[in-house]
Structures are given as C-alpha cells and as structure tokens.
Amino acid sequence: MPAPVFLPPLELTNRPTVSDQVFAHLHRQVLSLELPPGTKLSEVDVAKQMGVSRQPVRDAFYRLSKQGFLVIRPQRATTVSLISAVAVMQARFIRTALEVETVRVATEALTEGDLAALRDLIEEQRKAMEQGDKVLFHKLDDQFHREICIRSGLDFTWELIAENKGHMDRVRMLSLSFASRDAFDDHQQILAALEARDLEQATQAMRDHLARILDQIGRIRSDHAELFDPEPERE
Image (cartoon, rainbow, N blue to C red; front, top):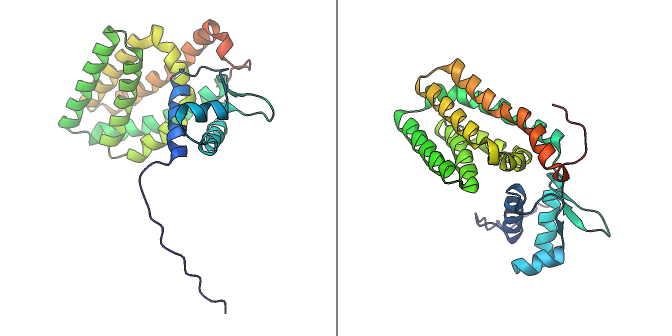
C-alpha cells in the first residue's frame, strides 16, 4: 500500500494575479475598441508599457486568443482579431437564451426597491445619452442587465453572460453612434413590463431588445468594413 501523500495547505487569496490584471486591462481595451481590430501588439512592448515581465503578458495573450480576440502567429505580429459576424450571432444566441429566462424570474422576484433602483439607472442612462457619453452609456447599459440578474438572485447568469458577450460588445460600441435612443427606449419597455409584472411582455421586450443587433450589424459592417472578417453572415 503506497504511503499517504501530505500536501501543504494553499494560501488562498482573492487578489488578482499580474496575469489577471494584464488580461483584464487588454480585454477591456479590445472590447471598448481602444485597441481596434487589426492593431498589432508585441509582448515586449506591452510588458514594457505596463511595467511587468513578459510571462504575464504571454499568458494574457493566450487567454485572449482562446476567446477569439487575438490572432497569434509564430514569427509574425500578434494582432487584435477582426470582428467575426458569426461569433457575434453566436454570442447573441447565448445571451438571449439566458436573459429571456432571467427576465421570467425577474417579473416575480424583483421588489419595489429593486424596480426603483432600475428606474434610477435608466435616468442615469438618459443623462449619458443626452451628453453624448457613449462609454458611460455602454457601462450603464451593462449595469441595467447585470442588476436584473443579480436582483433576481441569478448572479451566476450574469457571470455566464459576461463570459460570452464580448464579441457583441465590439459591435455594440460601434452601434452607439446611431442606436443609443433605441437601446434606451428598449430598457424603458423592459422596465415597464417588469413593473406591471407582465411576463409575456417582459420576455418579448428583452427578446426584441437583444435582436436589434440582427438589423444593425449589416449597417455597421458596411460603415466599418475594414474592422470585420470577410466571412459570410449567418445567424
């Protein structure tokens, strides 16, 4: 019988590693289009600019490439991936499935205090829209959806959505120059249905909201052809 193996206890910490911090920073810049599709990146340059060694940058590059946001080619420059219409449609499908089910729960689960908090968020969105602050509007847009999940007791759902919506986010950033009003109006309709405890209307309003990208992506792709992978669109 083999002798038992004794392993020392791990010192667990919630602090993000350097690799996690590099990944989060680059991920945020890619999704916000601060690093637009086609941008060339170098491990050496990124490490130097961020004041870290190359290993955490290499790890972050690998994670981003697995998510489809970086293209790593040996002996060639690493680049931010072009936007894939197929990946956008897949992300929309996953997000719709999760959020439609979430809003079913929210219709019954949200308290008056929760609804009041959502009303406040929509008012903040209104101000951001009127000020033309696209970055803040996008942040508040995400927060609206996140709060519905969390206040419905479905925190894990938002975690899944956040993991899968990145390819949509790049297109959503491009859409805000002409579609902020539509997104804002959609949020008002979703909230009105939740306040009325109208399950059918709430689920339909959420479905319609997330389907807008189906109509928008053609226009965005036409206006920004250089940012898109030249692949055929399909749902």
